[in-house]
Structures are given as structure tokens and as C-alpha cells.
Length: 339
Image (tube, rainbow, N blue to C red; front, side, top):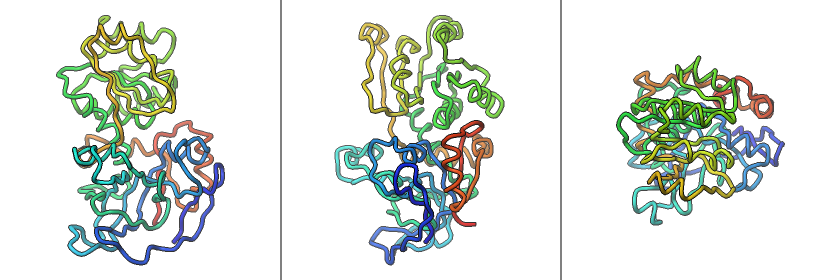
């Protein structure tokens, strides 16, 4: 089968790889339809991912059609499905408590093991969910949107909350969209004027803050000097994460949606006087995927506004390096694997 292989940082090529000949118990064979290109994939191509061994077939934002099932499967040939790319051990303390998204031995498709920049993939059926009511292209962004949906759920239900989302990239936009669906009054902040303009013109967010030395003053003005009950940092930037605490209202919560390989620190008096919570949000769970599917199917999320760039497996060898350098106008790029 055809696959896009990242042989080493900066080296992409089309290769032919053998298909897995038979299924193990509980596995399902999928014909990849569409796969999103994530910031993680750009980092892998650029050699910036800290937990990766090359060569690697990337790709973890997957929509696919069922090609072959194990006995007793709940799926039929041709069904359109979404893949949860977080492969959990099923036995560690997190898995036993229903949190496979933070499994102690987690393996992520396209990162720790080969992913879906290819024509076919075999995965555990327990990681496959029906794409009820979606088109193949609509199903591809479900995984990255589930990250934002999970972050909002991690914040907890806070009635009439004002929420600040720091970082208006794809994950930040997804978080903002699901915060709005949850009933939060949402403000977005970013260093990029283009991203803020996209958030306003494409998604209808009208409370926007340019990240600058005056940003905190503007945030306080918008909240009558109280701060935001919920702050989500989706920047993946340690400097931003360290600076996020003053934006949080007393009694509020700060959710770190992204992870960085850096030290995060804050002034304890500022933390303590707020009696605030700092919460990590990692990956997503089945209920987050299902929530996203329902929101897309019902029209509350328009994936056509999120998907700005499209290519094929052959085209990805040219386009992914280009989009890694030229991100103007880019929100979400999608590869169509079956043409």
C-alpha cells in the first residue's frame, strides 16, 4: 500500500509498504479516507518532537471506511468511522479508573507507532467510533476538535462563566467553539492579528485581545477588573503558560490544553489568594469524540470553515513542507487518502 514516510527530519517520501495480512482478535482493518495534518505532524517533519523515533508514518486525525472486521464486530464493511488514536494498555491505574487518555503506557498513532498517512490501517476495534451523520471529510477533524471539547469538560460546569482562550490556532479555536457551545462568554487572545481576524470573520467571535504588554489591562477592562472564571491556554508556549495566572478570576480555573518540555512556574500568593485550580487536559475520551460528532452533525460546528487546505498522499510530500513554512490562512489541512 502507498504511504507517506518521514524518514528523518525534513525528509518525506512516498513508499510502498506491505499490508498486515491477517487480523488479531479485536482488530479492525480500515481504508483511510481522510486524515488531518496536525501541529504534531509539522513538528515531526521539522524534527521538533521530543518523543519520536524515525522513520515514522505520521497521521492521527483519521476518518476511514471499514474494510475487514474480527468475528463479533459491531461494524459492517463500508461503515464510515473515526479513530481514537490513543492506544491505551487497559490495565494501569488511569485505565482502571476510566481515563485511558492519560494511560501510563499510552501509544499514539503517528507518534509512538505508525499512523494513517497511508491507504490502510489496522487498529483495535475499541478505538473505533461510528461517524454518524458525517461525511468522510467532516469526520477527519473530529479528533482535534475532541481535544478542545475535552478541555472544556475538564474545566467543569461553571454557570454564566466568562472564558478566555489564549492561542487561536486550531486547538484554541476548537476549545473556543466548545466553550461557546457550553454556554461560556468567550474571549480569544493571540499574538497573530491574522488568527484573531479569522476567529472573528469565520467563526463569529467578537471579543478579541491582541497579545501585547497591554493585554492584561484589556482583559481586566472586559471583566470589570475581575478576570475570567475559566482560562484555557492552548499556545504550547511556556512563556504564555507562565503568564496566564493573572487572567484568572478568584475562584476560577486555569486549564493547560497543551504540553511543553519546560518548567512552568507561578507566584504562590497569586495562586493561593484566588483559591483557583490549575488543571491539565490531555488528549480526549470517547464521550468527547461523540460530543464532537453530534455537534458537527447538528450544524453547531461547521468543518467547512475549519478546513482551509486540502491535498492527497502524493501531494502531501510537496504540500506539507510548504505549509510548515507558509502558514498564512492555514487552520486545518486534510489529506484525502483514497482518490
